[in-house]
Length: 182
Image 1 (cartoon, rainbow, N blue to C red):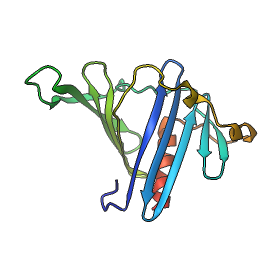
Image 2 (cartoon, rainbow, N blue to C red):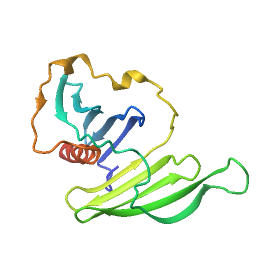
Image 3 (cartoon, one colour):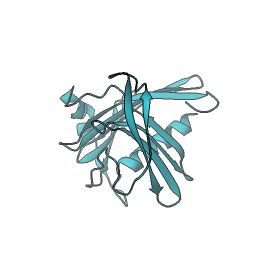
Image 4 (cartoon, rainbow, N blue to C red):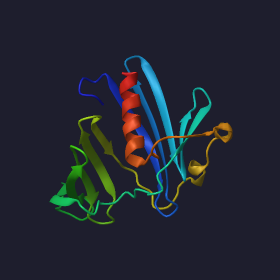
């Protein structure tokens, strides 16, 4: 949600660290317009537009970015979210922070037990703020079909780019596309 309430979105993430696959679906409203964005990251990257039944196929960096605490992160602190008075009434969480090139930074919160990602907030002067909050984690794949491109993607040609995309550039393009809809 933007600060002025003019735009808000929600979405789902399917994530497979073993198979190194990820799918991000984002749905939102901006003014009187609704939008849907679907990104599938396999060994290549699909940008899927269900309203037009179209698909762009792009290069994806071969360095998979797992959802884990970055190796250069620094521990900011540890807190209980909820209550620590009784078992099962809260979650022990660790907050980590670090720098993003060239002039950005991030903070991320992971549960102490299971190291489940809870929130990720990043700032980069070029793209502004990005915040991702997660919930309803399922161990394993609840729907393996999430990683199969739709039938109309079979016709898409691989676009040539100077540099392949990665998870961060894909999320940045998602944020920019969302801003254009505002």
